[in-house]
Amino acid sequence: MARILYGKEFAARIKASAEHGAIALRAHGVNPCLAVIIVGNDPASEVYVRNKEKACAELGIRSNHIPLPAETTREELLACIDELNADEEVHGILVQLPLPAPLSESSEEVLSRIDPRKDVDGFHPVSVGHLFLGTPGLRPCTPAGCIRMLEYAGIRMEGAHAVIIGRSNIVGKPMAMLLLERHATVTLCHSRTENLAAITREADILVAAVGQPHFVTADMVKPGATVIDVGINRIAPKKLVGDVDFEAVEKVAGAITPVPGGVGLLTVAMLMENVVQAAKAQTEAKGE
Image 1 (cartoon, rainbow, N blue to C red):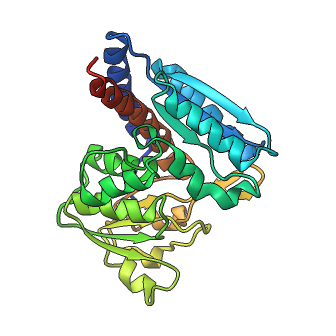
Image 2: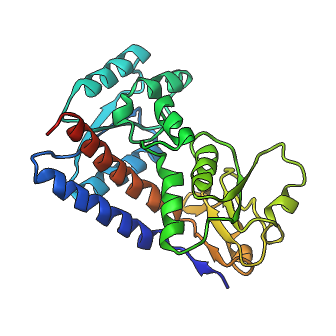
């Protein structure tokens, strides 16, 4: 049976690091602050925002929750972001996705409006550029959390063959870049990949990020591989499952993340670390 990589254990270590950083900043009169904009009342988004607020409270990070009505216009949302960009007491800005229609059509413009120094989600083109070049910057929280988990768990990345299923800008592509930074050999698969199972069976590290329940089956996994399940799929009112058929794959893999209780906890923890990192960088830039 596989070793189960519970997110709680690794998230606690990431949060401890962020809390230490926040304490150090407060000692110099700087209170790290995260502003979260949520437009409309999507139930899933509201849950995510509450989780972020809770994490901020635990670590002594100031949280500025900005709820906007679903009728908010593009101009009003951009103006709100501009105001936060100009506020020196706000160190991180996050716009909760998805945005309601018709604002959803402006998601790229909205994310690009955030000051890159405050882009704690790591989605701004400048942040993406830093990731691609391997230069210091804020990294997308979910893939960065997965990397930190692999490091803490002692799972070798250097020289390993990592296969990622899913090429999204949020998980798949940045995960590939972060694994390359750690000298893994990376194969990035997607919906048009031929002979997918043959490729995934070669993976020492398999990352599933496709958004389809139980997409990865046991016959797709190399014995002893590490399987990271990024998917969160609701198949019943109170039942969440991942992209991996956990019960079957657990018997084959060497290590595996559960859903729920796995990668999701790492995402929030890395967000906290990004807020502290952003606050530290902005403070140093001002010479304080």
